[in-house]
Image (cartoon, rainbow, N blue to C red; front, side, top):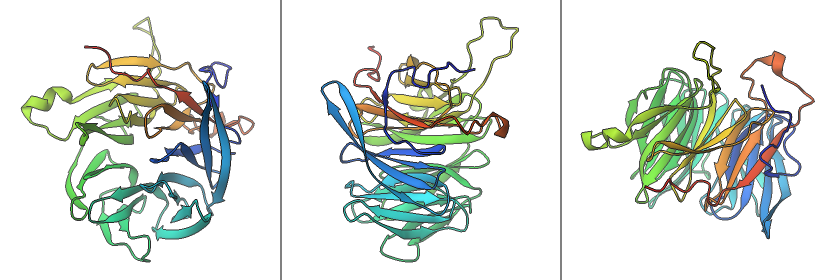
Length: 347
């Protein structure tokens, strides 16, 4: 299924990667620091530097939960990292003091953490398998607000004044964050299988819609404005599937584990259980590039704040069950320099 090379794209290999599957990657919004959450319970931080054309990644520090770390994010100023865990807690890592303190809790594993930086308030949004979204002033022991959901929360994204969360049962919850968080509506995207990740895209600097991906080699683009004039911008597309020249032969269809929009160009990346990343131009409805196949699945990804780096985690996602787990296989985080690869197709 895979090529033998663990790094066929010849991207920068981050030093001292996690010891178990990588669940989350997040770049600082303020500088080139990368954090990773992983199933070995740890949250790790690296500083990414460029020397000429060569990248360097220096491990800076790490902290540990009492259970696997499922998600991580940054405060708006890049001084704090928040991480959610199977130990049902969310902790705040102050990188200046290196303190690691609990700031939120749920009744089940915490799957999403997102910082909300509004003009009149700041808070941490957490989503859990206990079927709630909670909003926290990190100085208070109790949440400012709780939203009860129909199902478990799987993934979330925030671009003020909008937040989106995907739930089990293929639901997407869209929140208006102005004044205070409130549910705008709940919808079902045109994907027939379990949803895996969601990401908001912008137009003219404002949130304009979202991309969502599923376990069935497919993704959907959904504008927030669904008027007739914008209906052409709403579509699904197939991705992370094997190329079959003979129509009588079966096609391998892989889970799309992540979707992220480029912060400058508005193009996007998808990653999958096929061990590949792909870059897309949604407006031209075309693929810009597909990476070479890794010898493991790709579980998570992120762009840095100015879109010059694309980080992706190579580790087993358990999509083929425990019998395909190889404890000797290393986990890797790669950083690719993508200055021009995500530029939109010329019209």
